[in-house]
Amino acid sequence: MKETIHIYHTNDLHSHFEHWSRIRDFLKRRKQWHQEEGEPVYLFDIGDHMDRSHPLSEATLGKGNTHFLNEAGFDAVTIGNNEGITLDYDDLDRLYDDAAFHVIVGNLLDKSSELPDWVKTHHIYRTQSGMRIGVIGLTAYFKPFYEALGWNITSPMDELTKLVQEIDPQVDMIILLSHLGIRDDELIAEQFPEIDVILGAHTHHILHQGKDIKGTMLGAAGKYGHYVGHMMIEVDTVTKQITGKKAQLYEHNELPPVKNEELERLKWYQEGEDLLRKEVTYLKESLPVDWFNPSPLPILLSDALLEWCGADCAFLNSGLLIDGLNRGPVTKQDLHRILPHPINPCLIRMKGAELKEIIRQTFNDEWPHLQVKGLGFRGKVMGRFVYTNIQLVDHEILIGHKPIDAQKIYRLALPDMFTFGHFFPDLQRLEKKYYMPEFLRDVLEWKLKR
Image 1 (cartoon, rainbow, N blue to C red):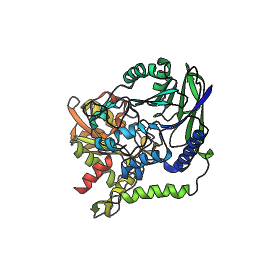
Image 2 (cartoon, rainbow, N blue to C red):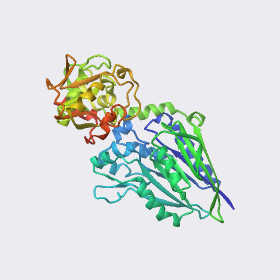
Image 3 (cartoon, rainbow, N blue to C red):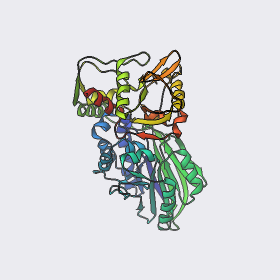
Image 4 (spheres, rainbow, N blue to C red):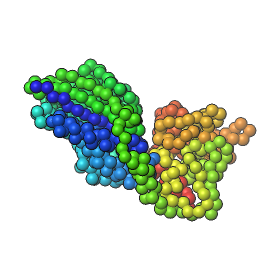
């Protein structure tokens, strides 16, 4: 006897709720339809559903996202780096208090090196015909960030090896919810023939008809709710063997319109904005920002970064600040609006010779107009660099009005987005201290209050 198992999956929504009304209603209808037809159906999210750049996610610290997942009827999720490392320890620990779904993460332990009570390393689902489906979840291995927050993150590959050995004898099929990225997914498909399906995320890749690697089917639905994934797995319920796999994506424009969806989207945004209207300070004068010319707010933020980290010098790019601040009351909503990025302060120690080379690279004339994507950046362009305790005098770089000593160790404060190797490859190998869970907007609030 044949049976088709239907799996619908989303990933990397990043709180782009503009398509959520359609996605939610589509998934609810599909789940009900398959259940009425007697077909097994499961809904999985593969992480980064939350992004604190949206006011509602910021104001509720992701609990609004949990509510949305409940409402749509999801069966399980794994976490992405936006859930894992953009909330402080206690807020992540409480994120899924009201979840009506399983949170499956095989490589996350709490500060006591125990499995958090809201996490399962795996779950086994049973269809009415008796098919046993083992579901594993893994998240990206951002060890320094998790450790700075108090979590213990373990090697996803090591955990996967143990989990596959544990559950393979107990199940007829293994599905991996992978917030690891396409390269790791392909590697896993090559090395773990026991895994039948890998639902991917993190690198925002799109697999329209899936991708078969040695009999393992990979699926992925891009980002921002542009697509919903659908995996169809045909099985023989007598032999418990998989006889076929198909994958497809539904583009958000193809989903049926929802009445008042635009009003719903605006309501969610306004609800978040209203929750954030808490006054934090009062400005006696405006602090404007200009991405391409000297302006006071970027300089103030750079000064704050230096003080926060206890550094010898600091720099940042003006494009981090989406807008300036007007004279009068300043609210949490204002700070979130102008600094929506999940970017943390970072301190790096380096020799003067290395520091001089890093600073020289910031003088690149092309960088201010460069459009930046990823790395936590939620703005438009890089903008000009601003500096604290760094001067350029007669083509010589000074730190604290003194020439750089090539052998002396200096402490440089900067946004963590510059430490990932994209702009300054040399910074990847240096020891870093990430200040977490504070974002740049928290540092600016601290400075303004002072």
